[in-house]
Image (cartoon, rainbow, N blue to C red):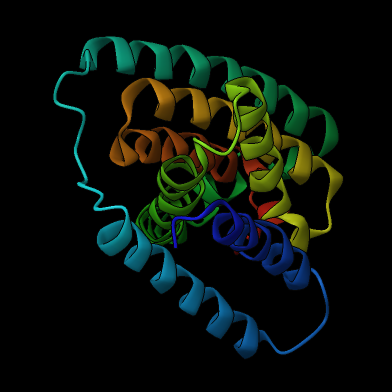
Length: 208
């Protein structure tokens, strides 16, 4: 399971074949089954093959992490607020103001059951398994952003692909700096929750 040939095939199936297939029209239950089996496989490989030890990055400068996350989040907030205001004023903070209970519920479910699994697969598993397949580490980062965007292909929305590509770059930089699934998940959750809050949740599959 550690040979170059095996990892190459594994990469193709998990990060290209499956995401592209999810953009096709076939049984939702079959897609859920494939997704669950794939996630179980990722967990198995991380624990049994790669002997991954999940750490919170004890040597991290928490103050610096929150400062950088706040700065990036502030910039994202300004850009997205202006975008929603210009394209769909009625959606601006609509769920937060009119459906606060739904807002709290969705943010909780999203943060725990969507964000963390995504980061486990697309950052922890990806870099643990494929860091030695490419000599060019910048290409490895760029490829990570590409496959992360590809994972959202089923939304069939160009803006979503662009946003997830940029998000992939941000999350990859954070993960490579901290080596922490938890911290990159916190950052991912903050930005994702903001997009839902500001009024861009509809295109990302959030119920409104």
